[in-house]
Length: 168
Image (cartoon, rainbow, N blue to C red):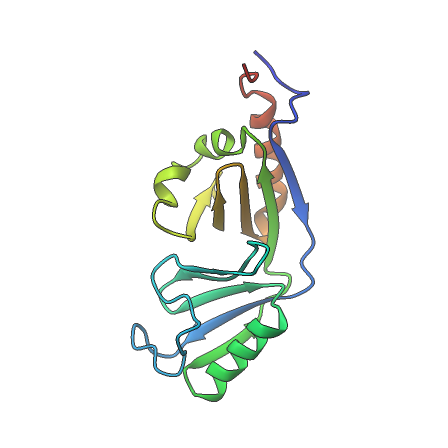
């Protein structure tokens, strides 16, 4: 059954004012990072509203989408301590929010989202053949896609959303 009018899965591209990556010089030796860093593989630091603000998506690499003043201070402190460097990657990553009761079902058509995020706050994945970092769970997921893949991701996800079975 085609479900083109179903609002149980929303796919929304969101502009990002600033996106930073932090690259540690040595890993897993995290000297200079301090205890406020999400250091475990796939760990994510979230703000009071539950928004992912620092994602450990690969060994020695963190994504800081729209960093708060606290996260900027954390990155600058680690850089001053010689732990690594921050790089402005605004424009490299586009944020796509996938939400609603069918969000996990849509993502399951490309990756086993439950397994990928089991025990993790984020993961580097390939979603619909597009490199991405995903976080979230339940009915709310955020994906940061390499921007050159955003149009293809949106087209594929929108097409597949319309083919999802209607909710019962």
